[in-house]
Length: 348
Figure 1: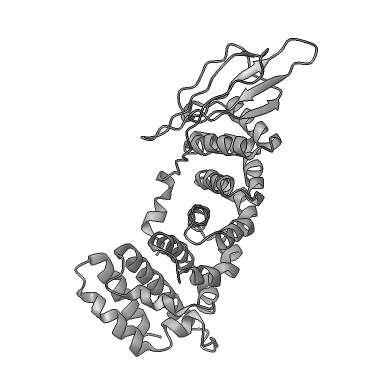
Figure 2 (figure 1 turned 90 degrees about the vertical axis):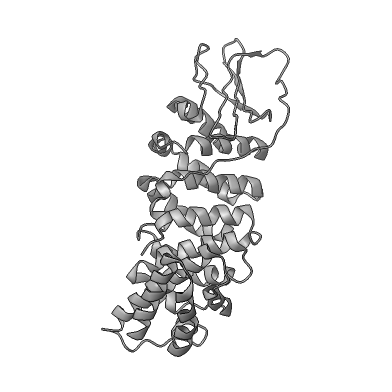
């Protein structure tokens, strides 16, 4: 069973936030032509850019990219006509707007400028109509290249933009090239940080199908290890990934042979957060059922003492004594997952 919330992830998007600031003019002799204000959802997020041009043989222009008053300077050649209309929403951005922003993102090395442009692209990617457009403009490669940036706000913005783009299966085919970098950011960032959570959100979406599970297999021990110390939100995100992986029978061996901390067993405590408990039970039930099917043709598996298998399933009596009290919880969802665990464990 894949996490039900993840199955409906197509309806969820990340809304990027930015700080307030004051807009400053660029150059004294350059004339302003157009402003783009972007607003999304109940929180307002503006991105304004101003096309400035001079007359001469070589036409030079500058864009003032502004989010809630924060100005950014970027030099580039503009393909846009002087009479361009100003879109009122990120959903109204046309392909040439997106192309212009991607051009700036790929050529401007100022992290503040890149952060604001990523905010705009992130909000634009919240609209499915822009998914194919951004991909066809080579936007996924351009955005993904910023994963190597050291600025944490820029890194989080990059992961958020890729997360919104990952709602499209064709986009996932390109995003999967960055899986190693995404996990690197998750594991090397501060525990419970925005970068870590943004990375986990992206991995949740990328693990909805079985297409990229093999690329994630080597990181399973790391995900399990993050359980020890992660806060409630981090634990929920980690379990969403693990539930998706456990729904794939081909991942059973990788999951059960992975080194796991003893903290995993504490997830089956009746006093724990309900969202954590039901996902932990779903994960255990998925793995247990798949293990029962596997043992029909492979009964010679050797698991190490610190493996997930040894922690969860080696001592069946202990597992059942931990699960049985959970049946007293007046929650149908929890009762169903506990029953799955108990039935499947009896066949091991």
